Image (cartoon, rainbow, N blue to C red):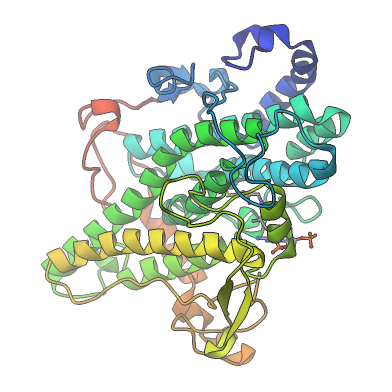
Length: 465
Ligand code: BYC
């Protein structure tokens, strides 16, 4: 079985790793069969498979049946670098796990690893309602690659953490998204993804947290973690594209219907109303903000001080003047418009989140241009930092999307104005009938601007059987 695993980690000569994978690989396939995409095991899908870390190896397109996908293990090429930040910026990166940081590194790798299978589980049923074969294929591409990202973290656990690493790798296949007794670790990965608007918002906002977390882990002093996350980021870009353009296409269609009809309530015309799109943005943006952890975090300060996890683009030229972050403060915003200054190192989660927020605002501006281009006055918005938060300074309080504090009863009473209701979801479920004919696209979403890998609009991305 190991002979089939594409890799650049010298698997053939790593007996310990091969032995660990010999047990884990069949368990992984069992997990995929149990909770991976439902109903498409025998279909043939036009997928890219990473077969090497070089430019021509990581995006190899072929038709494959998903259970036969060749999940592999890849590290980006080594770089000549120093740790570059924290208490020992001039030290060489570690090729093995330093004993004193073992616990922290394991915890971060397990947390990262846990999100990957969780997302596959969350998206399990979406194939049955895909708006086109193009979208169906993109969903499956995201699914197989998130599963490969699980492999990336399992490689680190198996290769560098001995017996407890193997136990953690096993646990990654045991927890389940949304399970009452064995849930996934982070909150957003237990939230259901019930329809395609959830999926596009998830890929826009939650995958984007992934991008920022992976970027800061790619700065890590633990070199194998840095190299594996750098390679993951090459695949992640497509997931973000699926999310951002997915929402954009929904907005385009909605805007077209609004313009044609001269009205906002375009539900009867087969579109998703802008107010409903706004509620989904509110939900997934706020869920995803929680993924950055608390703004004031001693864990984050330790990760930075020890060289385990850097800031976004820590190594890039001209981004940070100094890399110890011992001086200076961060102004942490609090409910009700107040603020509190905290030492910079304790604010690493918040600093990363701020970069993320800016990136989300860029995506939002792109969607709003679709409305402006059609002469419409309405605009989408990102809700305030304090809206619908369960982690950090705003946890437990209640705010409306503009950031005004509310009594919990008022929030509960008005919740349906700001977050998707059962009626919104029922309406979307009714709209989202599958469209599996090559070149055809459901009526609630605009067609994609171009095909995958230069393919024509009527390309048969998935051969159903
Ligand atoms: N849910 O100091 P704090 C992706 C816990 S997405 C539940 O604020 P810290 C992907 C925390 O564990 C990226 N619990 O947190 C996307 C701690 O517990 P203890 C995933 C939470 O440690 C789409 C306590 O609260 N990668 O790749 O600084 C598809 C106080 O914690 C949550 C990573 O997250 C939460 N949201 O940081 C597929 C990177 N937040 O110690 C994939 C690895 C916090 O009191 N993870 N807690 O028991 C990390 O770097 C950090 O663990 C976090 C939180 C950034 C998540």
